[in-house]
Each structure stands twice: as C-alpha cells, then as structure tokens.
Length: 395
Picture (cartoon, rainbow, N blue to C red):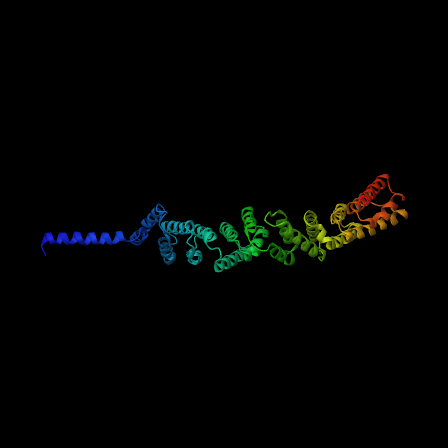
C-alpha cells in the first residue's frame, strides 16, 4: 500500500473508532476512562461524573464499587484507595443506587477501615429501606457491639453511632430492641443521643414495641421506655394511655428486692399514673383503684411520702367514674370512723379525699361528706366538705 493511502486508511480507521466511541453514552465514556486509569485518575473520573447530573451514572459507580471490593485486601492501607472507596460509596448514596445495598454491606465487612465503613453505614441508611437482609445484618452488628461493650471490650463508638443513625433512617420496627438497648447501655453522650434519635424514627406499633420492654427488661429500662413514650410527640394520646395503663398493671405486680428497685418502681408508678391522668384516666379506673389501695397501704407503713398517696387520690378524682367514687366514699367513711375514735389524721390527705369526691360529683358520697361537718375536724376540713356538698348538689 502506498504511503499516502496508508495515511488515509489510518485516518479513516481513527475516525471510525472515534465515531464508534461517540455513539456510546456519556456514562460508557466515563466507564472506559475509569477502567484504563490509575487510582488517582479513577478518583478524578468519579469527581467529574458529578458534573453530568442528567446522566445515569449508576453503572459507573457500581463498576467502581466492584473494583474497590475485589481489591480491598491489597489496597486497604493505601490512602488513594481509601479515598476512592469513600468517594464511591458517597456517590452511590447521593444518587440512591439501591441495587448496591448488598455489595455495600459486603464491603463494610471486608474493608476494615473506619472512614470507609462510616461512609458505607451512612449510605445504607439512605438506600437500604425495605431490604430485610441489610436491616437484619445491621441489627445483628449493633447487638454484637452492645454485647462486646457490656463485657468490657472496646467498641468503635463512631461506627456504632453511624449504625444507629442508619437503623433510625431505615425505620424498621424490628430494630427497636437493639436501638433501645444501645440507648440504655450507658454509652457516652453522643452514642446515647444518636440511639434516642433513632428510636424516634422507628415506625411501627409503639404499643407492641414498648410493651415488650415493660414486660422483659429491668426496672431502670422500663422507666426509660416509659420516659420515651412520655416525651415522644409521634405517639398518639390513645397509644400513650394504653402504654401507661400497661405500665401501671405491670408495676402493680412487681415486688422490689432492694431500695434501688423500690425507687425505680416508685418512679414507674408515678410516671404511669401521671401519664394516665393526662390522657385517659376514665378508661383506667380499675388499675388506678388497685394502685390507690397499694399506695394507701405503703403510705400507712411509712414506705412512701404523702405526695404519692395524694397523686393516687387525684388520679381517681379525674376518672369521673362511679367506681372511683365508691372507693373514695369507703375511705372517707373510714376516716370519719377514725375521727370519731379520736385518732389524729393527716389533714392534707383528708382534704384531698374530700376534694376528689366533690370533683367526682357522685351522690353516693353525700351522707359521709355531710357527716364530716358534725365531727371533730378542723374548720378547713369542714369548709372543704361544704364545698364538695355544694358541688354534688349541682350534679
């Protein structure tokens, strides 16, 4: 072939090859450059890909993820490799390449470099919603860190915090126990805060989730669970009332073995009664009566302060229930008998009983409130009885 013809042929060949490349997509061009480039070039290719937001760069990012995963053991300690891995994972999260979730989890296990693992966890929180395999794996990993920490071993707290945040974003109900355990483990403030934030993001039946804690966990954790319910705005009033009643029912069956447990049990009862009073006391009259009976015995034995008894009385007064009126009428009848026999009574307790009978407005108490005025009570008590009678007469 003549030299001139050869030049023409090469020119035509190059032109045809260039044309073939131009007929491919922009993404494919980036993929080809990624394949042939060094580590630093690969990073540059990924960075440049961001300048083409209208192009689907998912194939490029999956290609990069595959490269990083296949070469993890050889390149893990290389700074450029870590930068490439972190950038790849970050771009997968930004563009929400959901099909990369499982390979990302495998990278998390194989690429034991904290900065890359944190990126993986952050990205999984964005793209793994609904992927039960990833959610189960994350839960197991968090449970494992909790067990290690409980046994006194060192745990990467930054990784744990990122995993908790990821589980919160994924919002699976199945993650509630693991996140809850992390919240009460006594981790440093940053981890505990992220665990509590994650708890508030979990979606599901709060009654079922918190009931499991109330039934199975130690008293301090029961209290933490109820505190969470009290402060959580996403839990409806009806759900809070149901949970508070369950908490009170459970608390009434418990017998503390030491002073610490006694203090925790008192806190659980106080919070449950307080929450019931704010939400739906009329539907909880039976456990509130049982609570009053137990509280009265404990107070008479000097186990608890007067304020607990008055809280129990006030809770019954807010129920608007004839059952509550019957129980408090029996108590005022007993107090009248004590007064007739010359016993000294706690005036604040007597006033609370009278006030709540007036609030209940049930005429079953009329005779006994009237009798208060004829006994050796103070004028303050007699005036309270008079006011309660006036209230009864208006019903």
